[in-house]
Length: 122
Image (cartoon, rainbow, N blue to C red; front, side):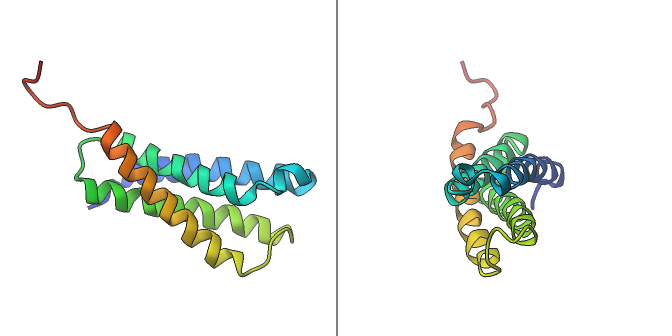
């Protein structure tokens, strides 16, 4: 089961980063040249954020939440970029899929970093 609050927060953070990059890249080619790397990086961060806010959830659930947050924020960012005529429509599928993978990776890494503390551990 996904943590709805963590998914909303992580997706919001990722979306702000993605859309900020797309808007800046619309008028700055140097930023636009980094859309692929930046977009996947922001999806990885969205996955990490999901893991942080869903602390203590099972690893599979955190990975799935990271995948969802990474994919959703990328889809929104790529859609904005498509509407600005900066990227082709095919990128909606390819970019979203690759960002889903990096979001899942962020969720997995986050599950290792943000695991719930063990009760009674010293």
